[in-house]
Length: 411
Image (tube, rainbow, N blue to C red):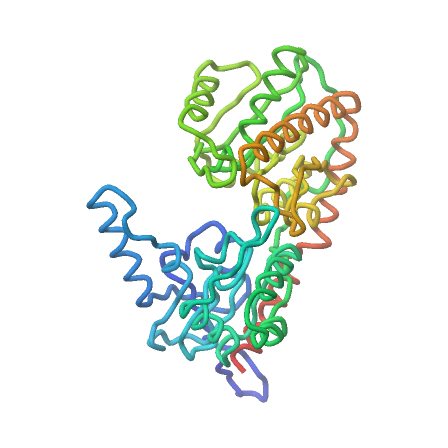
């Protein structure tokens, strides 16, 4: 990094952090990387894998099917050191060049298609240690790699599990570079006042997420049909979701999608639906909701959880992956579901999916009934959630930590 020594002071100038160009405006990058260190310049960068990815996507569009996988291309970087930046900061990616770099990750590094599902199921498969894996691991233990930033203890635990299946020579060098740094979140609501609930003023729940089924949307709809229509509870669901089809965990089908669309089209009194909204409008909805819902089948972290908490809106989640690190019974509600030793819900067989679905729906129904019986708990947990966000996700402290990571990486 470059400094100005005028007037006997060390003033940082023109410190450039390179961020992959096609991911620059991705939601996760905006939340955890871009402009998080005041005074540093974040620069969009490109490399050979970016061009390979763009070509693969173009070919796939021309032939009308995903002939060429882009998953591994997404998570590798090599610019032959042509981008003139001080440090690269990747999200789930690694670099083969000599320019200093750091990487934030949600599950594992390297993030390749033959490694990323190891943490799923009740028995870990053997790891394919091929040339691609070896090259990536060599890059990670190399001099250019400064830090591996796990979003959560859950991610760190899964990374350690992966290392246990790889050659021992990589284990300690990678562990020495790994730290846990939870994403930042500014407080958006200072106090949540208690309120009365009635048929004219129903209890308001909000669910936000494009991957509707993976985030427990099917179970949410079924629970609301039972509670609002059959039991006549005064509750309302505000849903913001594009209903993205993503069947890797919840195994949704076209029939499931048609059912959800038919429910929405029927305009039930308990549902307010938006395919998408700007984040500022989502925040306003969260501020005016009583509780948020994210009873996910699979989730690496849950950025919408800490955003809702920052609005004084306590959250109902499952107890998978990082959720117990950011949610608990003092600030929200946890639905207990079957999991493996790494905290991943069990969903790899039809039987496991059936059990998981039933437990999520039953957990939702029980929790919502309990809230209806004591609505004052919403403000109590909401205010506790705000306090936790303020203490654990402070943006200034996060930026100071990143600054130190960048400076150490750049030497």
